[in-house]
Length: 265
Image 1: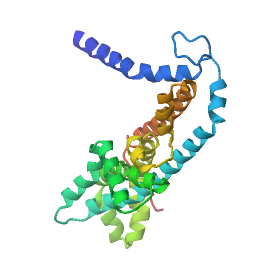
Image 2: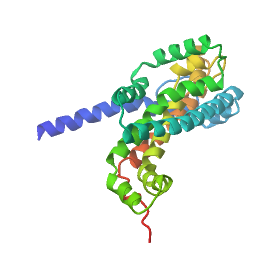
Image 3: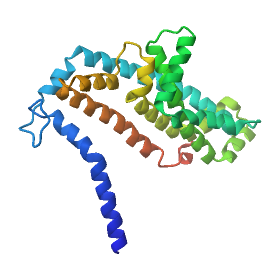
Image 4: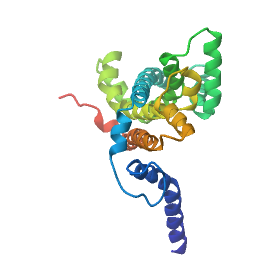
């Protein structure tokens, strides 16, 4: 009894330690004062309109959305194809190739950023939006690959064999059996990839050139220390955009996909 109570208390304290600073960011976004002090003197929405009307913030938001969507699209195609290749085919060195796909997520972001910057410089490629997308795709592939591969390993091979025995070709099997089985895993992987890309700062720093995404804008504004109210608003937005896809992805991957296969009548 005492052990269970102590564990619950410990979990509660850890959650408070982790999430209290995040809650304070949201509270400070509504602070009437531009000085972060507690308790706050009052609540206001003026910082939200001011932040939205800031052209630097809007440019950074537009770039972050472009990079996030572009990296997610590339990661979906490349990660899903890689997962199919690893799952369906057998060749020498397959496990090593699988490790190489997962490795970018394990490497520190600064290592990936420096490596990409060196590669772009060696190839004479100017830093642009495209280089940011390429940089983000290197680690976004991992979450799509892991989600799709895990779902493929959970699917029943007998369903595919039965469909082929009934005369279905490869495209029909993919459309009617495989895609419905892995659809939630693909969507969850896309959401996680977008969330990872949207708040990435280290890789962006080495691949963005003179451009600013929202994380880079936040970093620059904090260094100046004169735009803290706008920073709180932008940080609150980034937290929401990051947390919501993660929660949805967790809900989607919580259940199996076998029940979603359409049944011909």
